[in-house]
Length: 322
Ligand SMILES: Nc1ncnc2c1ncn2[C@@H]1O[C@H](COP(=O)(O)OP(=O)(O)OP(=O)(O)O)[C@@H](O)[C@H]1O
Ligand SMILES: [Mg+2]
Image 1: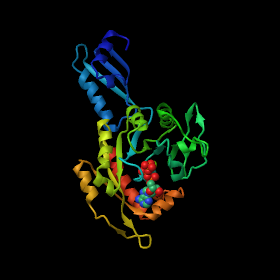
Image 2: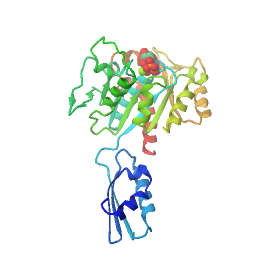
Image 3: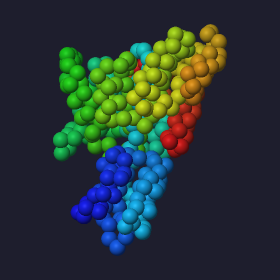
Image 4: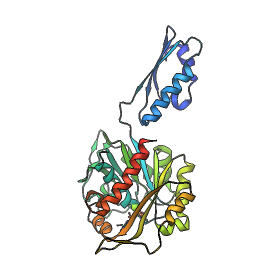
């Protein structure tokens, strides 16, 4: 951006694109740009290239436009797991979704954004471990399931109470999200319930590429999930879809799933909200027992693993097409 001509060209680009321009030279009618496409999907990168070329071609003094797109950092996208109310199984879903995505060959990390009520140390069996910092950034803990993880539970002394105010919470979340995630392409973020500071920091500062909404069958009837969908949509975060958790009851003896509340209500409710339905995870004692013991069922080989694999496949497809 040395010449006034180059500056003039840069000014033609939308702000968010101009912010990514690493260099812009104009010589002999040829505009050469280097653009940082870190964090963008393959589709978005192609779109960015087209937009730049389309905007600059034909401008006075420009006979040719050359765009070099670089993404030296891996393209990393945040996938938020949220819900309208507490206790519906967000943390369980987030952990198992991360494990199932990793089993598919995706590079995944897991951030526990529930600062006041962290669950992921227990769910991924990293209780009692402490992450170290490298160059003042946290190094995620390697769990036994192919998913590195950072949780407030690993950053506090056991039994230490948290009485933090908003800015400190936002700071802790930032530290975790800006950790050494290395080659992780997806960061699954387990959100606390509601619409507090954590969600706001998250949505403003680290905008997720998509959000998975977890709901129980009862909630969908009560439209709690609608509030969650609205929170994300208002913030411009696309909703991947709705997962129905604790859907039907898996018999601990024969594994058969019965449906005391009937079937199909959740799917219809998701459709009414204009959202995709990502599937059902049954209420299954094995899910609670294994989760409590730090063995995510998605890492096993039972029907529970199949249910999480099916969910991960849908989420993976969504990521590929967005
Ligand atoms: N499909 C399931 N079958 C059986 N138990 C489940 C299932 N999903 C979650 N649970 C259990 O329900 C409880 C609540 O789940 P979890 O902690 O994942 O919910 P949450 O939405 O993250 O809660 P919070 O809002 O407090 O963060 C846990 O004991 C968990 O093991
Ligand atoms: Mg939770």
